[in-house]
Image 1: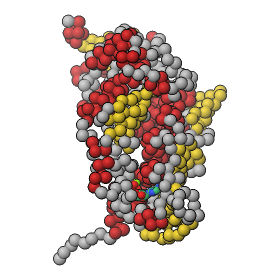
Image 2: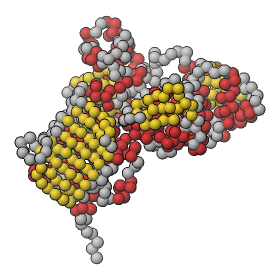
Image 3: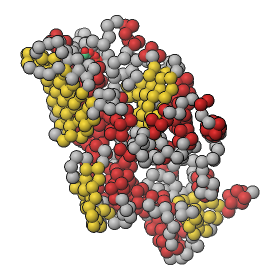
Length: 614
Ligand code: ADP
Ligand code: MG
C-alpha cells in the first residue's frame, strides 16, 4: 500500500510559518522591515499583551495596489526579486516573500493599504490563510497591518510562548535593531496603550541615546572608514563606558542586524589595553558591502552572515575602531559630560599627516602598545601585583566545570580550609590582615590563604538573600525620601517578570508611570547612596545572567543583588570586620566558591611560595 500523501495547503503553510514566525517579536520584525522596504517615513508599532493578542504596524510608505494587497499573502510573493541576478544585489530587508504568507497562516490579519495614486484603500481580512473579506475603504496612503491572536489555530505553539515580560523583551530587541538602523525614519511604540517610545527622525547619535541609554550622550566616538571592499560607519563608546555585561553591541551589515563573534573580536581587540579584560565596549557599527560579497542566502530569522573576504573585513574594522578609540587618548581634555557630541569632534580629526607631531607620536605609541598584548602601560602599577598573584593561582577551570565540591577544594588544601573553619568557629584569631582593600591574607598550616574580599561578600550575601527570597522575609528599610527610577523599556519589562521576588528581598517598590518605579524602601545592608542607580544596576546584572540562560530567577536575583552589595564592600575593613567576614564565609554552604563559580580564596603553599621567590 502506498503511504505517501501530500499535505493540505493549510498544514503546509502552518509548518512553513514555523520557520519565519516563532513568536510575536518575529511578526514585529517582519512588519517593521516591510514598512522600511516600502520607504515609509513614519512607522507606528502598537502591541497588546506583548504581541500575543495584537501586533499592529502602521506605515506611511508606498502602499499596495488592490491586486498586490491580495497577492502579498501568497507564499513566495515578493516585489523585491524578479530574476535570479537580483538575488546578488539585495538592498531590501525582505526578499523571500514568505513573511506575510506565514503570518496569515497562523493569525487573524487585517490589512488596509493605499497607494498615493489610488483613491480608495483596499481592506482585506484573512484568517489562517482563508480570505474572509476584501473591500474598498477610505484610508490614508500607506499600509496598516493588524495581526490578532497569533497562533490562534496552533495551540501548541501558543502555549510554547513565554510570559509577557520575556516576549516583550524580544519585541523590544527587534524594535531597537530596526530603529537604530534607520534613524531617518520616525518610530513610535505603544504597549497596552502606554507610549514606550516616541522617536522622531533624527541623527544616528541622537537615535542611539534616545533608544539605548541617555547616559551615552557625549560619550561616543565616531568611527568611519571607506574602502572599496567595505564602508564602515557608526559609533563606539568611550572605553570608560565599557560594561561587565555584554549589552549594547550592534553590527548592521547593509542595514541588517547581524551577530558575529568574529567581528566582535575585531572590535574588542581594537579596544585592547584601554579596557580591562572581561569588559565589553559599547558600539553601533554599520558595514556596507556590495551584496555580491556576502552570502545573501541567510535564513530570514537568523542573524549570522558569511563574507567572501572575512579577514580583510576584520582588519579594516579593527583599524577603524582603533582610530576612533585613539581619539580618546589624543584629546583627554574634551569634556565628556558636555552636550557636544564627541563624534562631531572626532570627524574634525582628519588624516594622520595633518596632526601635530605630538599627536602623531602618540598614535604611534598607541599602535605599538596594541601590538604588544602584554604591555602594562595602562595599568596602575601597584594595584595589581596582588591581583596577579591571585589570578595566577586560580584553578584553570571554574570549579563547577571540573565538578569538585567545596570540601575538596584544590585537592590537598581541603584540610587547610577545614582547619581555618575550625579555628574561626572557635573564635581563634587567624592573624588575618587586609591588603589593598581587596584581599584578606591569613596564615594557614600549609602556607598562606588569600581571600578575595568581594567574592567572599558575594557568597555571604548570596546565601542570605536566597534564603530571604524563598521565605519572603527580606527586611526593608524605609527611605526618608522615596526615589523614582526610570528604566529602559527593556529593563522594565524584565523587572516586571520578577517584581514579586524583588519585593521579597526587601525592596518596597511600586510602578509609577511608564517604565518607572518608585522606591519607598530598600533591603537592609543596602548602602548605596544612590538607590535608583543601584536598582538599575541590579536589573542590568539580572538581564545579563538571564541572557546567559540562567533559568532560576531566584538564584539569578540573589546573585545580582549580592554582586551589587559586594561591590560596595571593596573598602577598608576593621579587624573585627575581617574576622566577621571570615566567620560568615565559612558558615556558608560553599565558602570557597563565589556564586559565579569563581574561587573566593586560594591557598599558596609554602613550597609554592618558595618557588615564587626562587
Ligand atoms: P518580502 O518582504 O520578502 O518581499 P513579505 O511577505 O514580507 O515578503 O511581503 C510580500 C510583499 O508584500 C512585499 O514584497 C511587498 O511588495 C508587499 N508589502 C508587504 N508589506 C508592505 C508594506 N508595508 N507596504 C507596501 N508593500 C508591502
Ligand atoms: Mg518582508
